[in-house]
Length: 193
Image 1 (cartoon, helix red, strand yellow):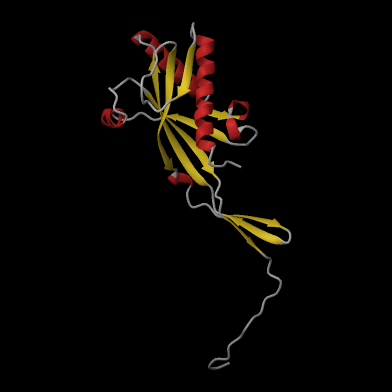
Image 2 (cartoon, one colour; image 1 turned 135 degrees about the vertical axis):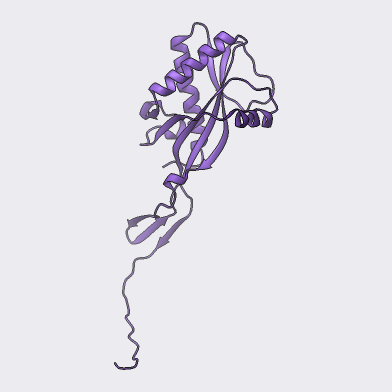
């Protein structure tokens, strides 16, 4: 059952998948790292930052029914999970444009070939769950990209934007109700009865 750590677990999963891809295809140490794009970013060794810039509710799977479970002698109701879309900016930092573009190509190829991450690829609290992370390249317009880079107070850099969905966080609101033991039907006498 996904809890509030699921967002960090998704970021860690992306970091590991990309680091594995870089180690297999690029000579020299290249790492992916979860980063907030603040402060100095080293280009030695070359790296790709995984920056979560937005988390929004997924409207396509909203309005689900409450989960009901009978746990004798009570009935347990739980609010529906919060469905999320996480948006990431993947940016290479190598100090060399050709290497930056190679890293972008490897990231694109890896996330295209593995557009659904599940099972042993998952990290953190997602390990051992039936969760599947669905990845989709979600390019931003130049204006939207500029806004993101302006918000982190850095000059624009060539990057990839990915959406990860459907991530769900369980609700902590649980209602335990005793079963109905008896019912009373009251009939009111009215006109013409």
